[in-house]
Length: 251
Length: 251
Image (tube, rainbow over all chains, first blue to last red; front, side, top):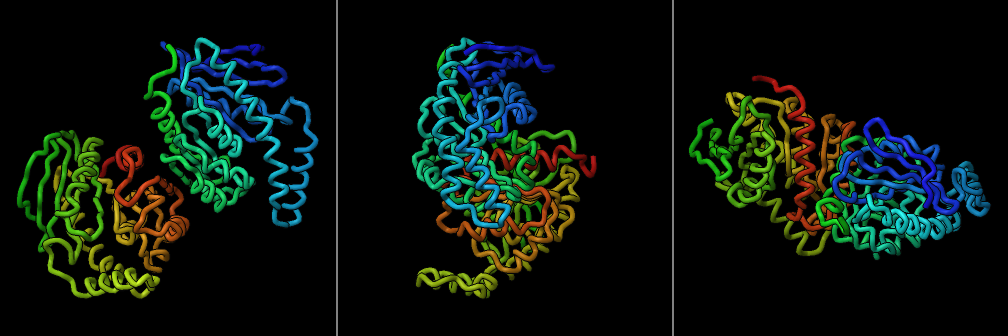
């Protein structure tokens, strides 16, 4: 892990860009901490870190105010990373089906999402190894955000992740529903009730499928990017309950 | 309104029983206040105040800690109030249908709920008149709890109620869905995902029907009486946002 730039934001949060092999990423740490900070991995849709930066940095600042470090990495095939022909092809197929008003087949959804999950999850795990080796980062670790299939896989396979905030989305492969049944960590699922790009029913079905004993669904009005401030606050309190109010792994 | 008893609970909350004509009720006011308190009306299922008391007083203490006065009244036909043959008959019809494994007809639901709503809502409004005439009670006013059809009617017809926390329930008359479309106040709807006594789908349909621009659905695991502590906290924050962080009507 190589840091490539560093700056203090106006609220004192330290923002550092890094590369992990070929993968770019960003780490934010709180202005002042007396002990290693718990860490929240910030997931995001595959639109490229540059495009997602304004929303990511807002979430990072919010988390830093609660004492959490946050980090994110570029998804395979997005942003400055090499194009990925197979996923580009699946995206084109998806667009064609939607423009033609046809139902989006399971095959298109699988081709769009599953290779991304298979490739991205080990990358997030490698980033976790590197981040947890920094003295300023402790545990426990949470995952927050999309792609929901990546969040579900990480919640199931990565034992260092002890709680997750997931953003409901459409285009959920059947395999994700199966994995969801194996989830055991506490989950807080945000659903935008009138999200123009997402179907509500698969989101409700996926929530129902999660095996976790503690799971909360919070649905609010508005579209995909219109999550209200108070819903962000509720997600922060979920992390406070599960990451900060339990003993750190170190420090 | 006649106060019939008064006691200080161990946390200093003042609990006063009262009668309003033939209707018994309870008022709880915070231990110390510098100004008239906002008021939350505590709704409850028609099981009688005595039976509901442990849950009501717990909610009242929680609200008092946030600076809210709370009050509740006995529902018609419940507790120490005279039996109400028509509603008893509808309850018997409901029990018979459920024990026979038959679907509960719209007619049974209407007969069970609509007369209760028609009679109870003006009583809650009369209680509101009396409570708001006390110097220690100011506005604004919220409604919290079941019967959901009573909460919906009050939220729609009573302009002094500016926000409501509703507990999802089954046996929702078609008329309540129609009224829900006319709701405009902010709503926070609690749904117990695995409630053994309630159907999930009508609760989701009713949430969808509400006309309010701000409405949140919070679903958690567990049965009817298993609302987790953190969900109670979230409902309290909803009231803080809508009742306390706006100017009082008086004082």
